[in-house]
Image (cartoon, rainbow, N blue to C red; front, side):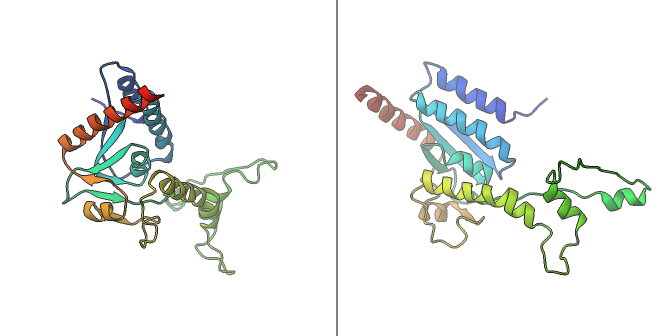
Length: 219
C-alpha cells in the first residue's frame, strides 16, 4: 500500500540501534541513487548507530550516486554477487522540464514577475530556459547551474569519498567523475571491501560488533 521513504528508513535504523538486543545493522542497498536531500537523514542514522556501539555493514547490488554516498559511511561495503553488482557513479546531475512551448501551443502564456530586490532568485533556471543553448558569445546556458549548484556538490561528494574510503584509487580514470564498476573492479579500486552473500555480511556484522564491544570496554 505504500513505499518507505528516507525518513522512515532512517527512523528504523535509529530504532534498531537503540534496542538492547540488536548488536549491528545491515543495510541492503539496491539503488541507482536519488535526491540529494535524501542523503543526510540516512547518514545521521548510520552515525547514530555507530556512536551507540552498533556497526553498520552495507550489502549492495546496484549502489550508485546518492546510494554510494550513504554506503561509504557504513563500516564495510560488500557486493552481494560478482555478476550484476555495480558500484560508483560518484557525481551530480540535475534534470528539469521546460513546458514553455507546450503551453504556447495551448494558448497559455505564463507571466512570472520578480521583485526588483530579488534579481538572483531562480537565476540559474531562468538563464537555462530563457537563453539560447549557445549564445553569440559562446556562453553556455547551463553555466550557472553547473557552477552555482552542481559543482559544489560534486566536489563535496569527491572529498567525502576520499575521506571515508581512503582505499579508493583516485588515479583510475573516471572513478571520481561518474564511472561505474562491476564488483571485481570495485574491490580492486577500493570502492568496496568484498563480495559475498547475506551470510557473509551477517558474519561481518557480528565480527565488527565484537570489535566495537572490545573498544568500548577499553574506554
